[in-house]
Image 1 (cartoon, rainbow, N blue to C red):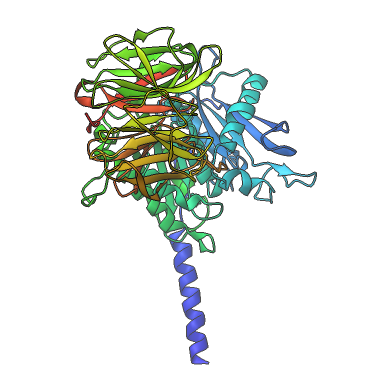
Image 2 (cartoon, rainbow, N blue to C red):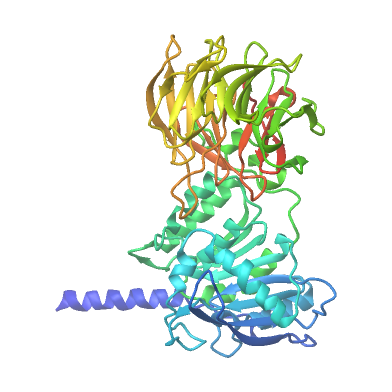
Length: 592
């Protein structure tokens, strides 16, 4: 009996401590408008027209501040689980309209339109517009990784809102924020992660960065992805959930640690609260002040002190860890660019494949110059140690014959090395052979450099899922081959006779959510032996042992096709990206 009383006392004591720890209250900026502050207008509406989430209906609200007159675009902030943010009654935990009125009047945030949207519900038995009733599509929309919800907002919902209420939102991502709590918190992060060019600020309250639908991977992804231009405010409490999906306090601490490691402009408010909006509501005015403060003169530096020897983090490749805005446009207006390569001096070359035109960018930089006009359609090319340019031809002449050719840079004269081939990309080794990928056959094919019009050259390796990019290690003892149709980068040992031995799936390419293939395309190595592969998600970098070091952002939404180091000191990373060519400076260098 005594032990039972003791246990009950322990339970009651623990309960009272949690209640005390969660005793957050709203401040004056949340309770009422300051004297003289004008109230914005709130309008309620419904949205039932989604094709991305078909057969869903949802309630929504818009807050238009008194200062908005339509003369220029307003800043935008989107709130998930809108019902819990839009309310201003005595039991409301956030009271965003009142907070916005006060902060906008003080100049602590710009003139900002707030859009509050509830998750979708499928079927005709939807819950009341207010309250936490079950909305059947909530977890699918909020907890899922990928860009579906971002597309819903950007392609469907926000255009509908702008047209319905005749408002204009700023297109500047630094003037667009997104917020949510719990699953809405991870949803807010996912939208910005997938579309940093559309949302540059995130407020996550008690965010569910746990394994509900795979969201626990974010800290790892952040550490191995080039820093995105996102400002992040995280809030959580020590008494948050710990259940089958994971531990919320630990997950948010992992997120904060990963953001610090990658050098994000972020802050983490870790209190003592439970899984509710009390703490987030109490600090909402200060959260918004921090989120909307002026841009930093310089972003925090990524953390590097604990990278042990052999760890090839992006901080070893990109200055200060880099960010997507570091890409420079080199040239545009092409039909389709490919075959990135450079010569020993650092001049960069590429092909406008459909037009049969080769371009050169001087090592010192500048605009691309036509180097070979009305030539063959080239998908891959590399310079050999002999200074000659070897290329994969996708078709020339009336028969559209595919060949391997060699071009004399001095005379621009072409000779055919191999015919009856299906080449994609190639490398030229000092051992007297070149190797090209045959994507359709799943093979790597070997051609002697001294060959002329060789028919059906021999296969050196097979069984690869749509091989595409191909690269030599700096010592030319190993060959790397990327899979376009799979998820691997193969590594082969090059024997003394030029044959390929010991093929292993040494590196695993990251794939986009809901895609089975990586889109592994062009491949190169740098002087340290790191391997770079263009792909659907960006340019993936691996160390010599096949461990991923990070993903460098694509320069534009269109795919990154092929890449090469060029420029002065071979320290510039060039990328062919559909109709454009870009470059950025690195702190490494390519193989000269």
